[in-house]
Length: 263
Length: 287
Image (tube, rainbow over all chains, first blue to last red):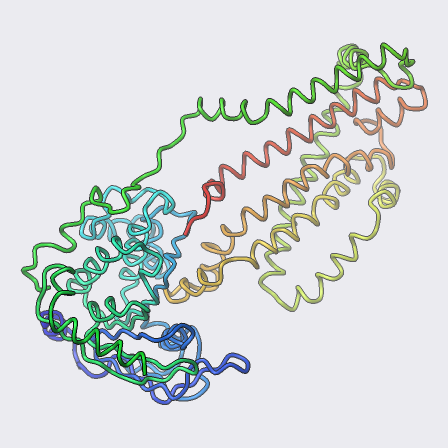
């Protein structure tokens, strides 16, 4: 999928580094969640982190986002070093859609704009076209509970998109969905990222999802998590998920990741 | 997937929603009424049965009505004494309850907000708040009557004092039990501390806050009656305390009945307000 990278880099200055982690350590009480983590994500690159449960995958996203600080090491997000500055550059989307039940779907999507002082009416006008573009038209004024899991997750993603942060941190974004919905929404996400390019760091325990969505798969060791393998995942152009997973390249990369996970 | 790729976002009309759940149908009001009847008729039937049993017991055992009046007797008193005594007593007590309750809601939510925002204040004030609840309301009533006389004020204050505590505690719990991930999400969406409070913590606290309000609603009339016991010239508590030594027992019962009905009404108003302000809280688990 070379179109994304070139298309986006042309618009923005300084390709430079998107996200850089150097010797990052994070400890909760006596438990060392991650240590000596080095990670580098190019601007508009997409990295997927896979690893056994509890290896500190989510911790990495928390410290990158600036929601938490690392105990050791340095983190740079588009040149920003302090947690406060990082927070301003990162959007974070966890497994649960975290839509506010007391707001309508569009009210939820408007939230980042309202936080920036945009009036409710103006925010709505800005966001409405996105509903059509991302297949949520007609559901603007529904409550989140009235939508299916897949649609809620799309609304949540839309909200993250509206936040207009260049770096997007996705923490098992589709983990709560059934496999069919999941396959569809993965394609949807690829398309969305194609039209709205972002630097993506995502965590998943689904190796196929990692290979499909990312251009590099990072494998972590069990706790305390360290990066044990970095596997490029560049696939030829594909039009459907089925087509992608049947490609020899896909299978080869997937097996490489599995092998790395087993060591 | 490249730019000329025709599928993807464009191929996502909502009708293709793989879950197929789409939008939940809204329940029409008539169906809800039927459901309510279906839900409450056993309670109503039990109530009617108990009242009939009461009536029967009084008749069979020939209990004098100054000891325990029959339901029919109470009802007769209610009608006979309505315009002279009970109506004005009811309005008096109702005013005390409503004003006191309103004060406690504003003060309770306000103080809970302050305590939530300032951990220091919470640490200092919360123990005192709990300590204050160990002073029985019965002993405060006459003291307030001494200070403020036989006016509306001491009753209103007493109602507010009784209602205040459950509101503060439950509202504070509601604030504190906000899903931390929602707050994290809000931070990554550039939400300010105040914005997070207004848009997340406050609405999230509503169900818990209303639990407190419902408890307070049932306490309110108790506060008013104690206030009137402490010294008053009108009100349902005043009627009771006047009628008891005169053995007008059915009047006492009639006053109790009105007091209960008033509490139930207040409870229903609070519940209705909750359904209006936090309908999502009754829609099952969201997010």
